[in-house]
Image 1 (cartoon, rainbow, N blue to C red):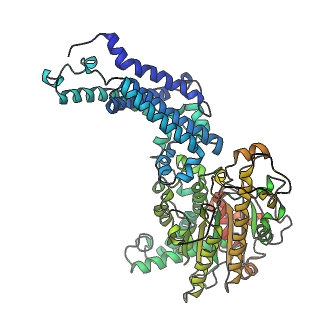
Image 2: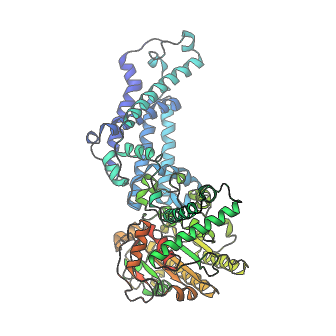
Image 3: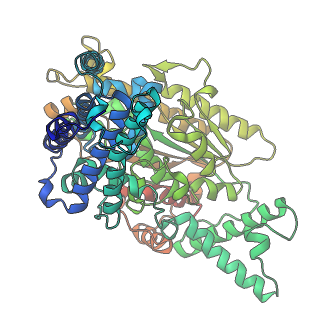
Length: 625
């Protein structure tokens, strides 16, 4: 194989690489939000963009041995990511981010959750279009003529240049050259990475599409300093300090025995000691904030239920024609609630786990860095004690209920890691009633009643904490059928054309309301104290409805309520906003937005909260802090 002219070399390799690189920059201009001019992004952003393009161009050469077709494949994939990001921007108000790459496999596992938002028609057309392009590219562009790159392999023996093995080695050398150059550019950029704000839209606009993804990938390896902001960690630390001081005064060091569990007695002894410590911590904070002291061994600790309602918010706040009686149980329970208001959640339209983790852990999502976008993806890097671990230390049995695939969002790993003794997925709902495509809210209420009934029959009377994550109201709502005239059941006036999604939504909201009524009735039927907290994880995805009828402000609604037995003991102990502020100061939490107290409600206070403050507020309202 002889050396070829520079023109031949340019046309075979460098021309598709260079033209594709230019087009990759140009393609970013259709991304939402649109990135700024590459020239003003910073040299690091330029090096990463060029480096990624170069490295993946080398991989395409290895796979297809056709440089032009390889470049087209890369551009097609980039366009796909940008288009998905644009759809996500419209639906969820944020662009495609690095953690979203795992949703490609999730789309295969759980197509109904994802595919409708891209569009089945679009998915079919894209698949057929790529298949056609693949056939055309492979047919019309010949495989790479290795004589064009003989200059790279001049050091190889002559026999290798004509043998099959030699041709493969030449191809590997060419591919490795592109990958090595790309890797070198990425390494150079990594020496001084540009800062990120973790506002995904802002970061994409400032850094460019590819560098934005690359920086978020880098940030996934960072462990955020969340321990100092975890309220349940603070409770443990406060008591641990108190215990150590008391023990040292008695001439012994409890650190090995009580903290690490080594020494003094069995593991059972260690757990008992740990339980005493956590109760002391709870009582310490309760005494400072005016709460109810719950001594160790008390048999009247309340059973607790937290209902995380899928896509729940009071639609009457946004859609004035919604009938007032749609949420009659919700209204009645709020009227008796220890506290209620709007919940500022870290998600819009989807990404349930963001609100879920904020509520369970008590950690402000702003403290998590890139992990705020999917807290369960790299959970071990920001694991902290949670409301479940705290209550379990108080003697509670902790149960998480989610009537869907247990493995979704890695919950089979994260839920036990967050302190739950039992995690019940959809396998715990054999032959359960469905409403629409998912297990119904009614079935969830029945499961909660069964769990509480089992606890009531237990001679040990171990208090129960149930955290239920509902599924019925999960979209896509536009895949559901709405009957003619059905909107009259939920709205006082005819809706604008194309607003059937909100009718389907109202249908599920009514079922959620019945679930609240059912669970509260179960708790009221108990012969012991019980309490319930209800909240929505995010508003639903209904872009057409919002365009025609107005959009919500993004907050959901919450309340926490005590049954008759518990209400008598906690009523009057909430002395208003001052004590709530004192408790938050004790735990180092930033205070929520207060809306005043009462507002026509005799039992509690109306107060807007960020999601991460809800658990502490709930425990205080139930007399546990």
